[in-house]
Length: 467
Ligand code: NAD
Image (cartoon, rainbow, N blue to C red; front, side, top):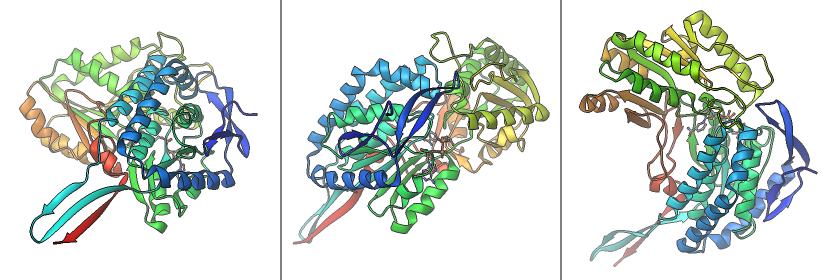
């Protein structure tokens, strides 16, 4: 019997089989979870479809209360979730605690949202009202880097709009979702949230299923393209939050030490496994050596280890596949530039890679052009601002970006030229429940969070009455 079940129609049930969850810091299996078979996926969707009919009739106040209760449920189990998250995902415990608290804060903020009827015209000729109605069953598909926050915020907004959900976590991080589903099941009418655990084998069934009205997907651009193709058969609504290769442009007037610390945090949070993490750092030639040295010092000082140790600052990569990928990037980086900190894979159990700073790399090098999703930070030199803006934009991705300068007007002028969903000034990797978040170009379609994110879980329905 598995330690964690799947949730169908308000009940915890065993899977068709089991799957193991590995702690990336030890490479040991520490739990088993139920693995869904195709028939359970069918049951999950059928249950969601049936539960949604009554939920659609509830007032938004009822749904807001449900979110408040889910938030309280998360709070009650915050320590347990954070610890499990570190064990299945690898991130330092402080980051897990932050993710749990952040999830609560998102849910709490969402309870302030409303979907009022909009009166767009009311005169002698006609009365036109715009309603935002739920879509039906929403498939929420989640990657492994933020296993609670990403799934929970999708489910919360989907429910708030009157939909029901089938939540599919990533194969390596299913437990955070299992606990979240248990909390939701204790609060919601049966069937509003169901889970599907797979080994990357049920996504296609879920995203082609005729009874799924919308897919809210976060993951890689490659998988996002598959989801888009699968969803086309029944023209499902889609929100795709995909990969990124965020660039920072650092102007010559910054305080080097202060900026280095902020850049370092943005590049190495969650061991570099953040979609809107800093992936390419362009530094003006006049401060290039100084900035590289400051970043190397920070990398040398960072404590790498098991995320359960309180003093760990950088944990392991989440899984063997990502570990192998990042080791490949490391080898190629050694050929492309000069590694001035890190560069090693510690000789011990766990998917650890030392935080690595590589300088003298250029556009066209793999480590600069690819979403590395690991603890390697390439620093690229530039001399001309127009040229560096063009280089920052010369990517198929367009998720985030940042500009660093004491001259805020200049920074803003540059920021407005960066082709990304978000561009920060003098910071990177800041987001919140009230700020729309989405990718430009191949980083995604649609937005999440904020009222715009809620509206993506609705169908506009117009009532146009003659007078
Ligand atoms: P992934 O694309 O491999 O997997 C994401 C999810 O999709 C998993 O649940 C996986 O099981 C599922 N999946 C796999 N094949 C599928 C299919 N054919 N149909 C439907 N679902 C399928 O991504 P990952 O490796 O788990 O996560 C890392 C990626 O996610 C990175 O590229 C990162 O940038 C991206 N990401 C983006 C955001 C964002 O908001 N833009 C946030 C976090 C992560």
